[in-house]
Image 1 (cartoon, rainbow, N blue to C red):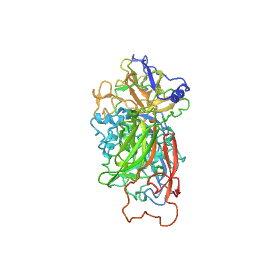
Image 2: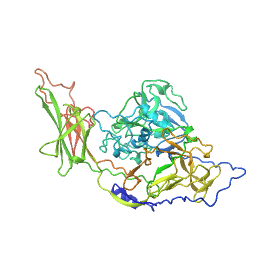
Image 3: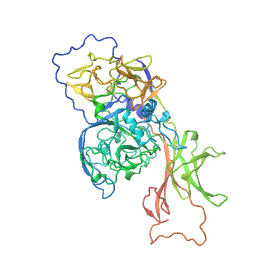
Length: 599
């Protein structure tokens, strides 16, 4: 086995690993022919019966992760609402299905682009291209249209979730407003507008405390999600009670979930939104479900996979530790000026504390575009202009460290999924099916009707398999039921991949290398995939109001309230590690406040 040194990203994560149970190491499966083949019985026994548990995990051929959402009935919509497009609340029954555990990532979508099936995302002019930035490979893919999402789902053998399937997967029959229950939202459960960390998307699966009852991740916050249905404001009044798929026609498609910009009142999973199908947004992505036909007749396995280093086995499988790094210490001022024509313009001045490396800091605003230039005499002082700095605007400024500090190393062995053998030279995993029936030898388990089924390796099963139990032994079984033999299985690979007839598997084209499983990143120095312990970058967020400096016209009088009473609001301004609360008049639009006041 190939021995590797893996970089971890935080002291807290390191301590968690050291406190865990004994590290799990895999043993390469032998390449020599087994000594014994289980004979075929004259009268085949009835296939074993398995029940797939809600939230069961399954890897798919594209290395993405799916969870099982069982059939069920729930109350769809908001029973507390008196108006809106999510009433009346109504009973809906759905069949079971497999769905992506997280939104489709840049890494996953890039495979479809490389295969010539999907179109690359299109970022707005002047905005960074994060799709081709390796630092964002496990972030949700954004800036894709509804049809782009459909094309990807069809490529992997799936479809977009219906609106009803999405809401059922998000909260089940709990009736709770959030995937995790009825506790108030917090930055430890999701990435939304009240969090200063991070200011953009987070890597998928970064918030294990926010999982839904079916282990679906990021069903609130991070990015909005395209779903299948056409949008109609009054659809709930006429929705079928079983497997609804939305109106037959429309001009906009339904968008569900919420994003890193969403305020708390819009986070409940019953909220509905819509967009024209050709819309592209930097906070809108998607996820897929597998069709029943695909689960029953999956494509052949991939011939090669990248090796990976499984996380250590931990009793109870507690969620990984997410460490939020501290952000840069900043002070922010709004400035208003007049040009030669007497027109007013706004400028934001940002001053970093001593010791900050400004080249490692990214400044952004959720209120519009912003461009920041360092002072020629003071590299710690920046002056920012752009559409966000219009006089009278209240602007949220965020300064974030670009890189996460620190790394530590432990030694592990690289592994392969069951049914794959590790090449210690290349670090690649090769499929061992060889186009025929698998031959049983321990630790494989002979399961009636299924043949020789592999046990999980470090809790993981081969792509297309899910974990079950047979006679007290953990075993991996095909999600769609008993497998077919090579002679009867459909030998059709997804578009862009090449069928290998000798080994009955699908090859990547030579110019398209395999990718790491979801939640892993490729380490060039180690030639293997390592677990990504996501650490959102350290950020500091500050509200600042750009003053209005143009003098009023003669004869104008300041606006007065219609009746005596408060004329302003208490606003909290954050300055680095400190904060101050002031009475601001008039109340800034869109800025959280702590109640009325009179200056």
